[in-house]
Length: 415
Ligand code: DCP
Ligand code: MG
Image 1 (spheres, rainbow, N blue to C red):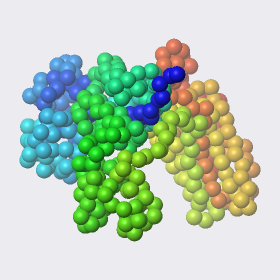
Image 2 (cartoon, rainbow, N blue to C red):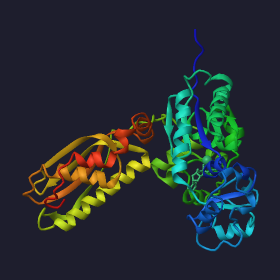
Image 3 (cartoon, rainbow, N blue to C red):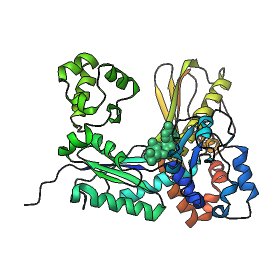
């Protein structure tokens, strides 16, 4: 008989993520205190300009902007572990941080680069262990239960493989906790940060979880924690000693029951797989019904804004699409949709606006409108589109013109 599988869930969190991504570009800063935060400043541009003739990894350390003398209202997004030793960290004001660690190097966030590496480390995980839940830019849950190696040493073998592969392929380190469920795995991933692995079994509850502060339970925020402290409860162990009824009396049925279960290490939430979006859309219901001719300017502005929002959503999620559609709802609550599929993948607001405008011309607009929506479908990842472009340069290089060429663009009505 095959051995019985016990549920093993991993939580993986990248170490000092935004800062680590910068260190890939500037490896000469490795081991130094570096903080990421604030907006892009003239000092950042000056650095690159002054060294335009040398590769990024050859810019002398001495030339990087420092925290010393920082004035402004910026806050730290993250800090390298070397900087954290001086007591600086996420959410601290940069001016305060400058006092604690004036020699720290200050760099801005590069979201394009962050997204690229976020996608890259998740793709590596998916190749090894396909049951992954995306929890944001730098963390995921992974169901190890049935993956080869996922049971060995409580999951340590698979965790090490994932950690090693991510490092080899990206140069980034991460920390992983493996436990019977998401709740415990999330706590465990912090135990041996950075570049650590921690394994928690059900029987470790008392020794490894109960001594922790209640705040370590993901879901207990500052408010709940304050209330717990007011009741004399600071550790998870103290929370676990309370009767279920007592917790329900103080926190209500739902929260009380959840606190009880959490303090006993219980959590049966499934790992929810990443699903590729089918389409990305935005719609808006107007404050008052609008008329296509009389409210032309207002409708036109709303239409443009929706296209810009959809374009921003696409960019954030890293997709482009080739079916552009609109949705209208009239004052009699009847709805119509129209869409058009173009030859090339698009994602920019002006192109979406042009194609959506074309769809609009196919709808008779003799009633007032209640709602307008813009949708982009037939999505593929921006990365895949870029790869296609490198194989077929002419088709995608002319993206803008091609997309607009397929449209007869004599503006009409509020378009
Ligand atoms: N982040 C942010 N604003 C915050 C906290 C974090 O923008 N208030 C960003 C910067 C981090 C990233 O999200 O690099 C991931 O957050 P983490 O809390 O996981 O922090 P780090 O990855 O930086 O550090 P750690 O090694 O502690 O995970
Ligand atoms: Mg992190």
